[in-house]
Image 1: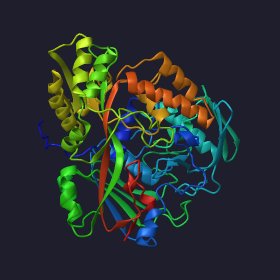
Image 2 (image 1 turned 180 degrees about the vertical axis):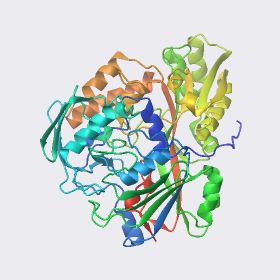
Image 3 (image 1 turned 30 degrees about the vertical axis):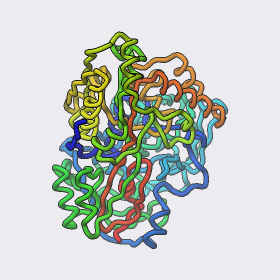
Length: 532
């Protein structure tokens, strides 16, 4: 087998989430209740706790500098419009969500003090925290949450994240008192908290994207698109004692090499999404800490169920049996991954771990291909993007492994605009890194009924029926049963080869407050970080 040495890195987790959101009916997600990875009352705040035990009490003061890549002169401070990792990093500094995932990817109350739904999960009541201030001194009210939701859904704003709120009826938003909002949905939807937990940042009713005001840990000071953003500590932040640093600078670098050199020389403190081959060079540097967030991304190959040869499930099963998963991980991502079993959302408490692990079986793969009329000479094209260096390597390894089953795979690399644009939903066979949270919303935008990001064109009557029941089912045990059957269908006749859950690496110099996390974004929680 060819030993592919070109693997560099996956995009940052924030960027993966962006791309996953652009085409879908919803963002990351899972149920709002315990059995689907939802809110866990009484758990620690998102991203808080463990580091204090390891490194002592936080220290205040100083300027925190985060080096990133991928910015341009089209960058924005409008959280409803941001399109790259730097846009969302800035949004995370300036704004807050109603709910937020913690390090274990359980959805926690954030700006929400309390919330509840009716028995059919189509009417939700959210009570906001008391006394939360915006940067201009205005108090957060129900009007601001209603404005945020309506603004995100407003066609004139053209937010790429409107799909995350597609289940909300904008006319069904009611202010019950100064801090309480009733949200009516077009149908029952248990995963609403997680659907709103990533890119639905709360803004005031008079929001101006040129002079942005939020409730986040830092205030806007200056912004140079494609170059640098400067933010200062918000002294009246609603989380007592946070943030710890005086200023946050987000600096745009042209490439990974230059920003890693800046980290080594102490010009910056944080680098996210470290390229795998370069991780070893950092681990030997005095004062530099590399944080690995295990299984924070997904390596996936999607097969279109409505296009030959993948319209025959025997071919799809054969292709899943072609993969030597450990060998692919070793070569494509240099071992920074864990073997997966063609299923999303390993972290969801409702995940069915009883499904047997699939292994390479070339004899069975060849037999299935013969039964499907492809005894020899089957040729397919596998498309991926030059943005996804790890997936390019994975595609090349898969192509090499497929030869042993008599299949020729031609790997096509296209630019990100093509791959992640509307055409990206039409490739017969594509290697991608879909962003997923818990099971239900992963299904909502990848293969569930009505998903506009259903790139594999998967439609299964039983699966769709189970999904529609599950998103309305408020009983934990019954919803888990429905989800397990959904996963059995995905395993038996689904459209994704998922050979690996991939690690994300971040590095820092002189920074504390971050720990590995399922979401793969420990250093984006700026309010928790301090200079050690």
